[in-house]
Image: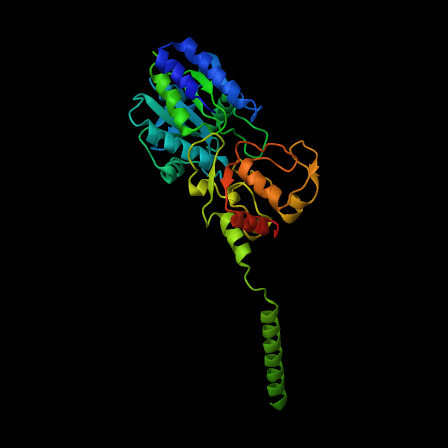
Length: 202
Length: 157
């Protein structure tokens, strides 16, 4: 995925949400077609609120997805700690994103949500974050197992292969609504650009 | 007593014969195979990145064995992923048979790998039938001798 021209469109011209969405769509359609027809990558218009999901974070704190997203601009990924294939790369990309973010977008956060809540205890999630380099901007959580399927369906992340989730990132605005699905493995620099642009919107 | 001594002597003779013949049949270590094994398992780091990215992946995330269950490895180490885990393997099993026997792959016509085709796929993501492999597989920068070592290893499985 190359969202560089998207970032330039919004930041250089000061255009609003409509230009942002148009830029996102253009960038992702261009980038996504050759590789992953099964991914529903692209802008989400109008933005959509996720289903209610109870979460337990790596620090044992209990919350909900709605509460966790509110007031932040967020990049979210699905993963599980025993995953050996895509998840280590996803973890490395979010760790790199957190390092690059610094204080560029003060309200930005990165969320890794496990699709294996029976196995991924808060301790397992802490260890997983530690493996890649923890950051105050990056948290992991396990959902209530009964609320996982609606979340996966909402994100359109389910795959038919042996690894049952995509390696996409999902971007949420400050109101906690989904505005963008990336292609698989979005570069860290692009995650930072999108979050930075989202943070400039009301 | 004499018969017992004779039996012990015979047993020792047999043991020496078996041990000696076993040693003479044992293969000398193959440095290329060992190098390929080390590359495959990540003991020797690989340079790799996702298409479109401007940074190499961390060492642990790019090893072949993360996604490809080598048959020998699987036989030696039954999967540690519990049945509760959503996934057991991600990439196809690599072996001499899976690589070098003609088969349709990724919806393309029948194709098979040789060393050159294997190295082309690792570097650029194009398989022998000229089909692009998924973006989720990193592209690797390998010295020619390392790619040869990897090919030697995977076709030994």
